[in-house]
Image (spheres, rainbow, N blue to C red):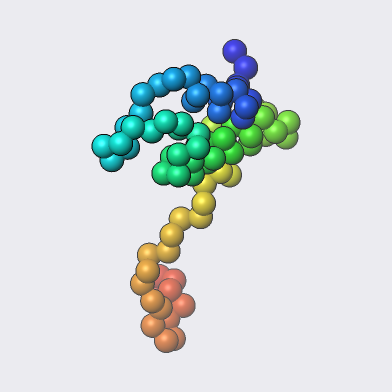
Length: 87
């Protein structure tokens, strides 16, 4: 079974399903402001997976390419401290 295209993925979300977010009914999953970011991210994963140079790559490789960088810890380095252990 082949991986769906981005268009097939989005069309699959427009199947008449009943979705509720924060107590309100969502009329269109792909167009809803709260859900459209998630839909766009998932569509990007489908787009990456369909790239010829990534065929055969593991799903973790594709997810890593589609994911934003991890946030920093928020801690600040002290002057004279490079942040590396043992320095």
